[in-house]
Image 1 (tube, one colour):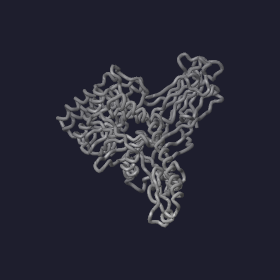
Image 2: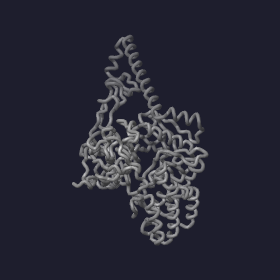
Image 3: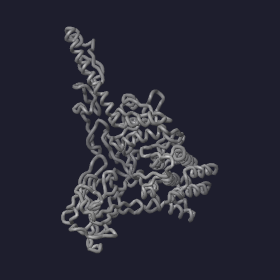
Image 4: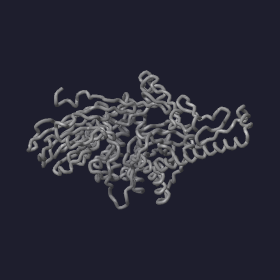
Length: 621
């Protein structure tokens, strides 16, 4: 294997996990220079991970060296990443700290499968002290590298580090894969999840609740005995009975009632034991009952305290302060108890499962006889998710618009928080595009207009920027009425401000390149994302699947402009829109999309202008 191709050769797999991640071993990239900054050894290297993208949240890009810049170059330079390290203040070189002195770090772009690592000297490159004249760059899992000043010497630097890739099965959705039982990989007692990565289509499997093991192996998911672990059941001590996939809290023989910690077991008058108990002296019986009541009261108080702790953990105190003290919300959310939502979903039964994502699972629920709701349950909880959870509650409580999903309420007393929304019956736009649903031009224009109306309302009336406009966040009712959803990373813009300087958040492919480059967020960032959605709406395919280069941000607009000049839009239009009567309208829609995709935010139209242009087209269909 030659020096110049070692990163394109087979990658060593160290571990494959059932949760959709694998750990691999990647060599470092290095370049060494003379006193004038001219390269002596080493060269840039390319990374190819096939269909398995790097995990953005679980990895980082690291550069090590003195007066060097480490670059992770993508095919689109706008979304490439880099960091710079120097050693002029060599006294600040500190073990364990990547503070741009001897070591620097940068984030990994989500969905990355192909990139090039380049190490180059800074413009004012000088050799510092006795440190190596070499610089290093590598992708490594978040906790997989701890800087040491000795790493500035070539002889001591490790030659490889572990990194985390995401994996999935096949190249179809769960729904499609389940149609062929012979090739469907999820075995008994499992749940299927669609891949959320646009560069890695497919699905993955997990053992259903109450089971553990290998979901891809026959009989791999085995029943978990919840009775062996008090954390997995809510029964009083000694009253747990394991059943396949779950457990029951039963009362001792001769007693009846509720064997849960907050329940009560009482003697069964019809049993022989009941007769024996009645024969015990009143003093002993009274003492026994007193002990039982004391025990139950202690457990009741423990449960109350546990719920209060969860309430605080899940942001309840912060939510109360913001919603019920500072503001007068338009839609004050209902606070549901855990018992109410367990009953509504039949204990979160898989039969009520209607959607899954990277952060949570959505269940259909029945509140009363006629009220359908969608209940989002977080998979795990950390501080960032708490912040997103509270953020979505606050924003939706301020919004009242027919094209924005309505928040019904929440539950904060559980281990992970629960959000309750109105139930939307017709899935989302991503589903209809991926499943090649035959949407008429009228329906597509209706979806585009109503999405634009929702965003225009948010921008002009509420001064809210969504930050994650994409087809999977555009829900559809049975009559194709739009309901924009998922406000976890949305934000308010203070009055008088033209933009926000903030950490970049969103979905690659729909993310405004100007925002990505500068960190300055404006309403025009949503306009850009809407432009990508508009293209996918009329082409019936993801923008990444079109006949354009991977430089999506600049390529899509340029490619569509070229097709307009050639009068060749038929090459990309969905089959439903290729009739001659739609030709002029299709051109107008494409021109609107191109204007939204302008690389300069100030040149893009406002959502109000986009809405007005789209409404003009309705009468021509």
